Length: 425
Image 1 (tube, rainbow, N blue to C red):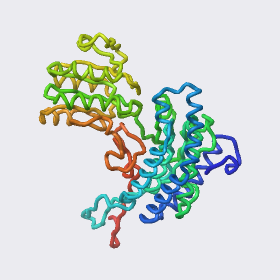
Image 2 (tube, helix red, strand yellow; image 1 turned 60 degrees about the vertical axis):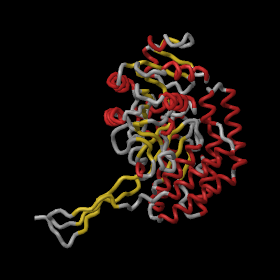
Image 3 (cartoon, helix red, strand yellow; image 1 turned 180 degrees about the vertical axis):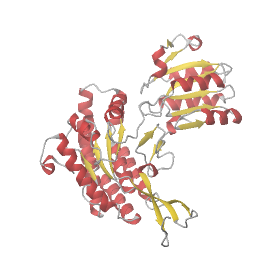
Image 4 (cartoon, one colour; image 1 turned 90 degrees about the vertical axis):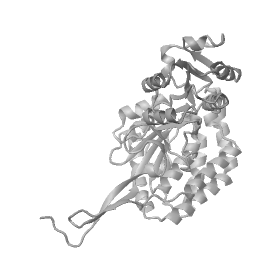
């Protein structure tokens, strides 16, 4: 684990430069490790997480106590809190990444142009990746596992609210990885919570190859605004579910409850529910949400369904609540639903509930989000649920990677050209 003594400085820029150079050197050696070697190292890291459960829980208890004292919201505390089940799930996630096919060296395609060169595009690691994140200590393990599996070194900067948890998790991961030959420096956690260190990471063009922010809107906005390094991110998780007139009522109710209330603090949680004016069980869905303690902010027609509903403001349609609060609107058909989503979606995840396959296919084709779903909860917007083992984050941009970013999204490619003495005329 990186320490201030190791960097011999307390200057944030010098710390980042020192750690980045060490990470780049480690990455060059890591890139030479084979599939079986990296997989074995990750399995050892997973075992170390389980072995260090008591130390991780003790560290996490300090963070949770500090969070409660500092008035963190229920959603933030839920993201922060660890228990035996979550640590085991964290370790299982690392093992799942170990079992995935190694993307490095995969031949994407081959061709032979008229000049006779045999061309191929081959996946390679991106290099040194910086991860800036808040609250969720499991990101420490997920990010380290995914980066190592794809042959990348990683520089981690977790939030101050999870500082003890992150240190304990990183220490366990580093010990396990080193036991199987992963170079020291391949996984490093910043030894300082100085906010200036984030600025130094964002300015480290030429040393850090990509930044991935995971956290609240203010963090992501700052990263996107200030970074001189390429950024892979999503800003908001304003996710919609549209209940079409042909939706099965029981399914619509179950999916609405799950999409909103299963875990309110994750980016895949539904924040706006659109109900077709011709759907016969609108009140039943709304009543079910209210009975489960969900605060509903509705438009004029939704307000008429129940006196407990509050009037929605214009800001509600563009708000990521991350809490048991939901904005609900009634729409007149698919076109109006599509228009609402186009105006207010953050491009993360949007879903339709309907038994009309033609309507569903049009929704899937026309909604321009990273993830579009039919008859499923938006809470499935998760790399593990997509069979990716774990994810580094959900990308909502249009370049390089989109949706859950896992191993493939942590690689780039190079061209290899094999010739037989060709010289260009």
